[in-house]
Image 1: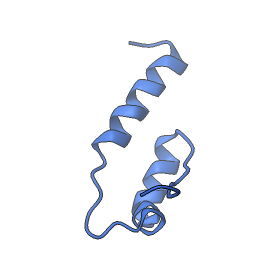
Image 2: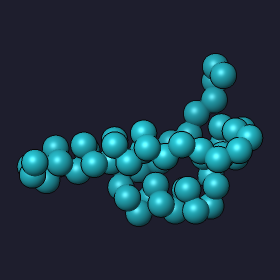
Image 3: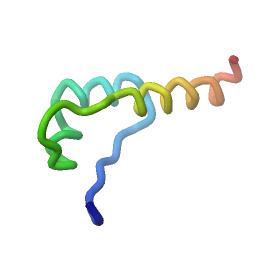
Length: 54
């Protein structure tokens, strides 16, 4: 919905903590489980760019 969002640092530790605490579910007011594949793909791509690895 417009105006809703959640911010998190692009680190595995921060995302893991947010998922463990269900912060995204509360912030986005989602009922049910949250699909985390998008987070994982984004973090994996971000890590490769920062570290210069492939």
